[in-house]
Each structure stands twice: as structure tokens, then as C-alpha cells.
Length: 478
Image (cartoon, rainbow, N blue to C red; front, side, top):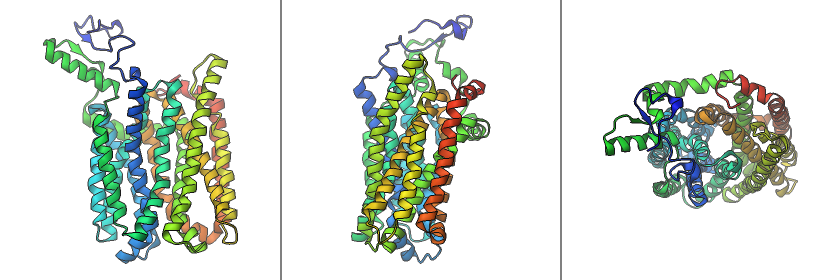
């Protein structure tokens, strides 16, 4: 039992606050061994990988599904792919508060179970309407890991060691869309599109079993549980965890969860700038996913399975970008901290500018080389370059957000998830029409110019004014 904390005024109230047993308490997730931290990181990344794979796995199967269900609307067909991503923006608003009441692990497992049930149902769909509904509900359940994962990493990793862990975790939601279509293409061609659902349900079940070994990471919940156990064991009802006095009811939490992300979006320039850019990058990723079948099958004349192999270029780019970004992020952050004798979130920003330039360069390359007279490897190189830039930019943004809003990470990630999901849902809907009217060259050039504009404006704004914005924010660290 710890001594009362005078800052809480508990002595006057004859109450004894429960905290950690000193700075080296092994029950504090920040003090876990490296093995425990990396085990937790990999399991959380496993949860985060299932949903993104499932989101894109149906991409090569959309035409087969539309044909079987007699769907002629292009928008309805693309919604089979993108409705899943729209649910990602809504799920965190309800699942987030549950993690504050019951811890992160329980909510991760709950979301995974919901995904599993409705993903299986999707495999048994008999109409486009059923498919869209089941895809939305499975995406809702699968959204939990995408918003809770960042918080779990912040729970266990100190800022100076967080780069590599975030690099692994951020690879999952972006590497998943590259893995999914490759598997989906071969499954669709050699079995049936329904197995794209059944196979991911099996993977989800395996991840859920591994999740049994994941220990709780959320410190306030752990301290609350510790206080409850001590009261039960000792009979001393004056023992309490601070969160028990400050935490609102679940109804109030849900109201806050729904209101706070929109409040942050409406008032925090940092979140607006980074959220819009992250949404653009996410939409760009899903636009490429939606455009691949028409490019590789119609323009290059490849079969479904062979066309799906072109998604490897996305995976290679993301893998290279993850390794490069993780090393550079931590090195730049530590160098700037040492040089300035400070520990500022803005030290995550320098790498964002070259990453943005990689995105735009890759889009120009991809667009103007997407021609049947140009070897298939050339546009794939441009796609890989874009993917490198996207994953490095994602790492920078996620690290900056975690460092700037450590107490409100879940709400901030919910705010950015709303924008990301809207972009991931909307971009594929206009992909085919855009390329039909502008062609791949000018269509991708428009996106490349947008990447330059947003991708240069955001880091310059935050590098020059981020500290001032944080000082004026009631939510940020300063």
C-alpha cells in the first residue's frame, strides 16, 4: 500500500489513494520487460491486421459478387468494398468509452468477436443489401483495434522508445490492404469469393485465442482494479484509485466520446491539419486498391490471380517504408532532443516533408507509366514509392499525435479515424469515373499535386507554430 498523495488532498478526507508501488513497480505496463512489451505489441498488431486485410480482400472479388447478385450499379459494387471502411469511423465512438471503463483488452476481444460473427454472415450473404449490411457491422467491430492500438502502445512504451513499436503497429492497417487483395485474387479465381470471408474468420479466431495472453495495459483501469482488490481483501473502504473519483458514468463517457472527437476536430488546428492529411493518404490507398482491377485486368489483360500480384508493390513499399521510417524517426527525434535539450512533439515532424514528396512523386510516376505499352514493373515502382511515403507519413503523424495528446489519445485517434474512414469510403466511389474522364496520367497527377499542397503545408505549419498551438490548447501537452 502506498502513502497518501498530498496533491490529492486525500489525508484531509481520510482516504488513501492507490498508486504504483514506486517508480519501478513491475505491474506498471511502462515497467514491463522488453519481452512483455513486444509480445503485447505484436498481439495488438495482430488484432489491428485482421480488419484491414478483410477490408480489401474482397477487392478482386467485387465483380464476381456483383455478377452473382445481379448488381449493375458501379457505386453499389464499390460500396461492397468501401462500406467496411466507413464503419471504422463510427465504431470508435462507442467502443472507445468501453475501454476507459473496462480496459483495452476486453474491448479488443469484444470487437474481434463482433467482427467474427458478421464476417461469417457476410460469407453467407444472398444479396447486395445483405452484403453491405454485414460488411458494415463487421467493420464496426473491427474498428476497435484501429483506435485502441495507439493507446495501448502509449501505455507501455516511453516516448523515446515508441518509434519502432508504432512502426510495427502502423504497418498492420496499411500492410493489410496489400495482403488482402493478393489472397483474395487467388481465392476468388480458384475457389469462390465466399472463402474470402471464411478464411479471414479463421484468422480472426486464431488472433482471438492469442489475445488471451494479452495483459491489460490501461493504467487507470489497472489501478482501479488494484484498489477494488485491496478493499475486498483488507476491508478498508478508504482505499481508492483516482480514476474512481474522476471517471464519469458510461452514459457520460459515451456522450463525451461522441462529442469530444468533433470538439477536437472543430477547435484543434493540429488535429485538423494532420487529420485531413491522414485522411487524404488513407483515401489515396483505397483509391489505388479500387482502381487496380480495372488497370491490371482491363488495360493489361491479366487474370484475376495474376492481377492481384501487383498488390505486392504496395506491400514492398510499406515494408521498406516501415523499416526506414522507424529508424529515421527515432534517430531524428533523439538527435533533436539532445541538440535542443528538450523533448518536443515537433521533433517528429522533419521526416513528414520528404515523405510527402515521395507520395506525390510516386503518384506522378504511377499515373504516367500506367500504359499497356509500358512494362508492368514501371507503374509498380511508382506505386511502391507512393507506399513508402504513405507509411512514413503515417508514422510521423501517429507519433506526433500520441506525444501531443497523451491523455486524450483515444479521442484524438477517433477524430482522425472519422476523417480517414470518410475518405476511405468516398475515394473508391469516384476512382473509376475519375480515371475514365482524366486517364491514369492526369488523374494521378491531380492527386499528386494535392499531396504536395497538403503534405508540405501541414509539416511547415506544425514545425513553425506547433508549440504555440499546444500552449493554447486545453487538451495538448506543452
